Length: 188
Image 1 (cartoon, rainbow, N blue to C red):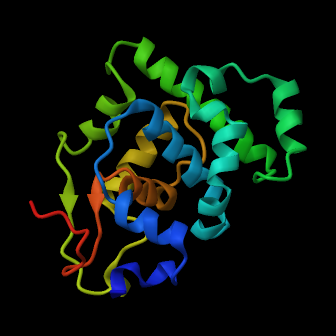
Image 2 (image 1 turned 120 degrees about the horizontal axis):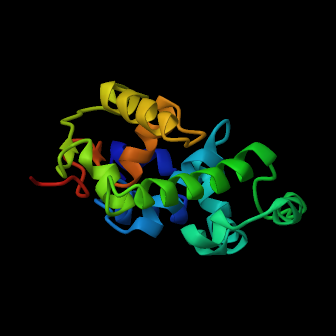
């Protein structure tokens, strides 16, 4: 195991996330939304917790289908708060609903044809590849995540602070922070 994947500590779900998903460019609106929800769920918790609850979260949140979650009402929120398999935070549940509605509003405005177009417009569709040598060099946030966070908040998204957004941008591959020498590193 290299230093890049050492944070997985031999956990098969964490290793699979590192090797197959983390920092891989994603252009699917539903998965971009799912990752935004998962990153928001992580606030104050470990990524290991989220990865181990991911299947239950996807099930509870209708597969993170944007239109389905946008239609959740107070009765659904109460139902989710009773589900012991997920993170039972009313604020995080409401953020998932708020963000689904914000995506719908964003697309309906005509400014962007898709959530994908919105997410990737910040880098003109290009992946940002950092050339990090050690995990200690990886920032928790940067100017890009601060700009995306500000814009998302302005558009009505929640649980999108610059630290969450930085992790999100890594998770959907806008940023590749695999360490130099990691076999999962982009070769652009």
